[in-house]
Structures are given as structure tokens and as C-alpha cells.
Length: 176
Image (cartoon, rainbow, N blue to C red; front, side, top):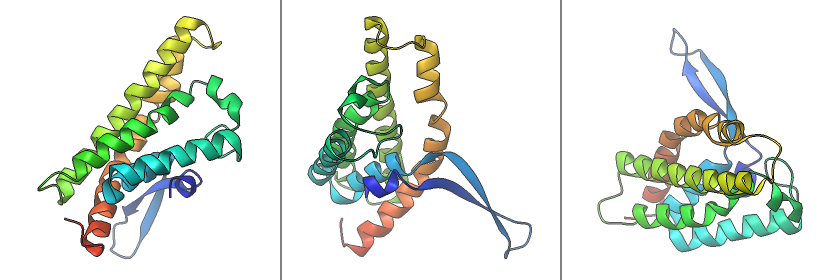
């Protein structure tokens, strides 16, 4: 799911003035992060961590599936910190979603937002460490803006979609 989500562009459906017309508003994001969060909220922490590790392994060793490609050299890019953050984000989001009384839209959407914030924190920490080490040509504010602040609004807009999809799937799978 994370692999396919990374290939799918995201958009919002905006209703028109009459009920039959709609428009698509493209977002500058893919479904990669929402797919991770959806896996955690539906499948739980263990399955989501396994999926995250598998996704990172495939991207580092086999296929160019990450945002800017792949291979082991991706470790030296500023975006790799966000991929590292997939594992703890999957675990924590999955643990939160499987607590008692979390099977409602607001709780699952909140778990998604918390997961997104955790992922951003991991990515920014990696960027700060790399900037202090002098690994990248861009300065720290530009890196944080490009990798964290710029995509954040689009990713936040997708969190309710993750909540709706996870609630629907949990009900279909009889997950309490």
C-alpha cells in the first residue's frame, strides 16, 4: 500500500454549484505518507512497521520508489530522515489507533495528524544533523521549508481522508 501510495498523486474533490458537478484540486503531494498512516490505523503497529521496513528496504536496495529516486545513495539526501521516521511513526500511530474507544472518525483523524507531526519531527531532526555536518548545499531554513513546511498543508488536508478510509476499513474488517 505504501509503494502504490507513493505513485498516486493526491487531490481534493470540490463540489460545484449544483450537486452533479465537481472539480479536482490537485495537491502537491502523493499518497505515500497517508498510505503509511492508513496501514498503521487499520493493520496496527506491527504490520505497519513491517510494511515500513519493507518499503525502505525495497527503495534502498532494489527500486527507485522514493520521492527523488532510490538506491543506497538516498541515505545521503535530506529526505531520508522522513523515511527513517516511517518506522516510529507507524508504531506510535498504530498503538494510538488500537487503544480503547478509538474507533471513531475524530480519534482516527487525530491519530493520523499525530503520526504526520511525528514524521515531520524525524525529518527535521535528520535535516538539522545533516546541515550541522555540512552534508547539503542548501542552508537549513531552505531545507526545512522545502521538505517539511511546504508539503505539510497538503498532507494535513489528507488526514481526514485517512481517518475516513481507516474507519471504513476497520468497520468492514470488524476491528474494534
